Image (cartoon, one colour):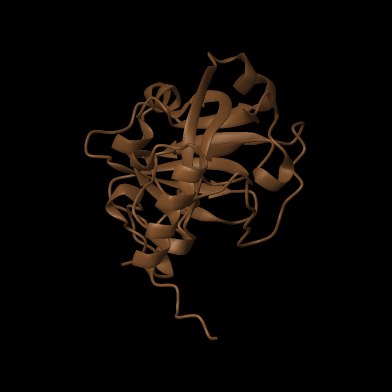
Length: 209
């Protein structure tokens, strides 16, 4: 017997049932999502091998004090540990993931964005880009993350360091981060130019334009 197509609404109902089966409060599950115990992989442009000896992160653009960090300088900054949930636009959610890194808010404060600068474009070692409002990047749980589950972040998940933005779909948490360009106007990133929503809030189900 042929199964009916899996509609987003039906998928969401199955996700709620799966959350209950796993002992996860369904209230933690954004609409249309389903929990997973795995950490699925998806790469849009390849998987660069970035040595920490060659790694750097720049904060530049519409800022008074542009700068770049080497790996040892990143690790010397105040570090934040947090446990958070992740939500991918492909409809999986992973709960209680542990991370450690540097708050992006601290980096923006050091760079001192110009008055009127409201956005940033994250760029990565593989050529990937994604856009975010500065307001979101200043949230407490937004990190340049270099540790996951108590271990150095593996290459396949964006190591040595990635952007972590738990309040947005996971395509906003850019892997292999290398720069943040502060801008006045919103510059769309790779997936945003290809039809994904410029904001990407999972609770608003902002998947596409």
